Length: 392
Image 1 (cartoon, one colour):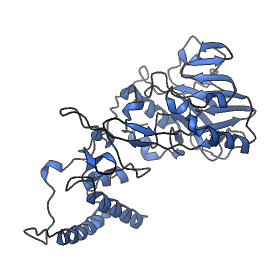
Image 2: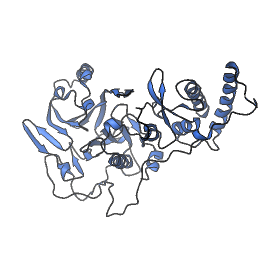
Image 3: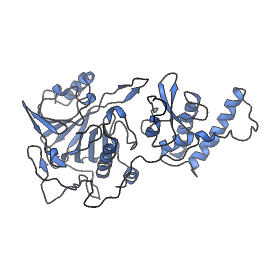
Image 4: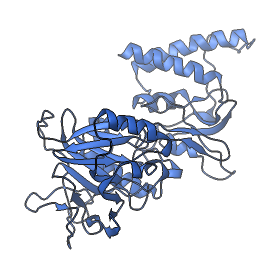
């Protein structure tokens, strides 16, 4: 594993050091997908967007001949982003650094560069030396009175969608208690009707290729669709429904996690008894407020399928929680709460209305779930390190 990681990093640094970035810097990439961090240039004096994408590290938005603009930073920063560890005293980093020294000497020789002391490394200029990234999530110590973490009160019934409540629970636990048993016969079945992706094409005007992930939950006899994708996904979704003998079926719920274009393109493909958009519910010709207006959590089909408020992507964004999913445990389907990976500090400005709320909602979901379904990728397991990072 360590050897594979070493050579993966070497290849990335070798390629990244040759193209796009100034000398001494390398292209930065996301941990989960290894895709390049792309950015939108800002006016002089404004904060560089790459610093947020790199978790507060010393990153810079620089032009690239083929990709518009990309984030560049030191090899140390790339190593930390990909591994989650500081290069200091890392055996992987030491071995990688030796490989890079050999490559640098060969590259300099081929280009006629003759340093004063060919045995020693060319030192990195001070202006690009960095400290480890600072976490953007600023967590305050909470008391039982001010705590925003939600936990189910087992003595009181969870509100269901048709019901309204006049009281708001302070703490609702939505995840299973340890020890966790992921083998269950009665939990909801989760399947993906379409798997999305998220590819920015950035210049001075940002555009995105962003078909979204569409999820089907079967909770007993109750059926839920979470998000509906872009209109260009219609044929793919229709084929998926036909293969599962679901085409033409009337679902119990269609849930739109955020009122953003990539989630609402095929609402008319999924005929449902209830369409839930944020904190509003449509039934036939009637539009009413969801119980989420007055409660932290509401029940959909059963106590295994729930809705919670997760503002941040939009003011009224919501997340579907599926508990006791076979082989997975507790799963959060949150749309733009996590765009395509589990990077806590990633902020996609076009799909974020409030950064502080976004981080608070991410923490709440991470602390209570075992898997995440981002808006534009396959499901991702929630690691113990991720829970430690947000101080669950």
